[in-house]
Length: 181
Ligand code: CO
Image: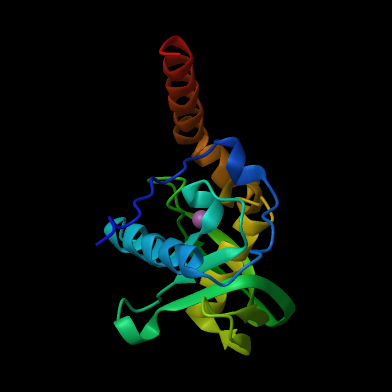
């Protein structure tokens, strides 16, 4: 039996979080292992959604589960949001790449998505409510857009120290990695 893949969360401001992710070329076992490992890390981190750049991959894959029930798992590969509709609604969001930081973010209440399942089955569906919000948050990751870009100036100010702390931690990690080379 092969060892399951294990990923580590990428944290703001790691550069991969700013990349525009590319389509996955093949619906193969590697993709299915990647998706499973993303779900595993998402659950282990108590998250409801995770995008591939958050595990260091520049790929258009996102996974989510709004309820935590196995039947509500959703993995979207090569995903595009084709339409956003409904009222803009404000709700609090967190992000596994911004531990401890929460902000009220405005998003349309519905989105229509075109994607593929990990086995290559085309998906075209409209989502609303919490699921639509998760999808839009994770989709932002595929475009290199982050929570910090969507939060209000007031929230950015409120979280200034926490954001700076993440930057400082990133700098000391990269400095330590450079020393050990
Ligand atoms: Co996020």
